[in-house]
Each structure stands twice: as structure tokens, then as C-alpha cells.
Length: 228
Ligand code: NI
Ligand code: MN
Image 1 (tube, helix red, strand yellow):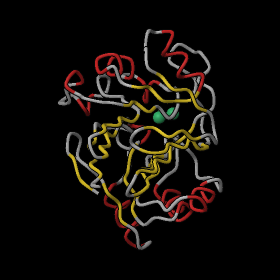
Image 2: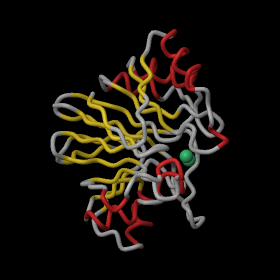
Image 3: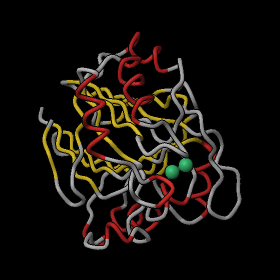
Image 4: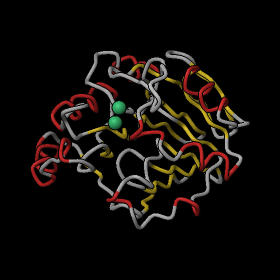
């Protein structure tokens, strides 16, 4: 199985496993850096939301409805979207896992906050471990570095980790390097950087730090795809 990743900017990745399209944290139409992405053309079978912040859920309702996709998030966020008319949704909570047709999803701890755009409680923030038939990856969401990430390495063999690197609201690159160590991978796919002034970072310095740590920083141009 080849895993295809397409970057839609900020923390939004489309991951294709075989023929299943899994979209993470769509924040595209409000993101001026992603203005070339046509949201209405995005195809998704599943929409996974790590937490309730606007910069992770902005396009979730429209994309989920347009594709009749399955929305997967924590209980509070899933029900909030159900109340907006999203028909297919699956609520989870931290530490729980569920087997879908593409593989097993475990909703794991993140150290962050999760208020929804209208001020409603978005429950507790999380990340996802996705175990499919030929591998496993971690999508961290917004989080600080936490020792809980070591539990992921105890349970799973992580091929690559999609980690926030933009600092200020989340881990910076140094903590992302430690997070990759904790979950047991050398491959960091970066997210949550350079979207806003608060999270602007020096990408050359980040790449240098990661290579000096013996790891690989994978950064994808917005709109581009890679296979892993
Ligand atoms: Ni956030
Ligand atoms: Mn965020």
C-alpha cells in the first residue's frame, strides 16, 4: 500500500490509503496561503478533526456534506456537527479506538485546548494514530510535547508523524524532534507553520535542526502530493 499525502495548507492533509480518502483538519477557504485550492473540488470519504478550533474545522461542514463523508472527532465536536446537519459522524474520546474500512483509528491525547468557533465546548483536543493494512502513522493535531507520546511507540510502529512545528500555540521544531523520538520515527511531516505571523518559522533552520538530529523533515508545497 502506498500512502499518498496532499497538503492543503496549515494542518490540513488529505491522506489516501488504497482508495479511501481521509481529510484532516480542513482550514482552506479562510487561509490566504491556500487560495489556489478549490474546496469544492476536494473529495473525501472521511473527515477527521483533531480539535474544535476554527483553524482546524473551518471547511469541515461543507466538505463533509458535499461528499456525504463520515466525520470523526471527539464526542462534543461530532455532535456539534450533527446539529448542523452532518448525517454521518462517529464520536470518540481520548484513548478509544475504532476500526473503519481503511484501518484502525485511535484518538490519542493532545495537550492543547478545543473551543469550537461559536464558543461551544469542543471537548478535549486529540490526535490520531491510523493503523492500516501495511503501516501506521500519527497525526498529532495541535499539541505540546508530552510523555504520553511514548505510549504510542509502545503500541504502534509509526512510519511517519505529522507534527505541528510552528511554535507559539504548539510544539516548535526542537520539541517535534523529541516527539518523533517518543513515537519512534525518523520521518516528520510538518504542519501548523507559516500560516499566520504568530507561527512563522525559519524553515531552513528547521530543516538543519532535523537533519542534525538524524531525522527527515518532509514539507509539502500547498496543493502538492507525495507518496510515503
Ligand atoms: Ni488549536
Ligand atoms: Mn491550530
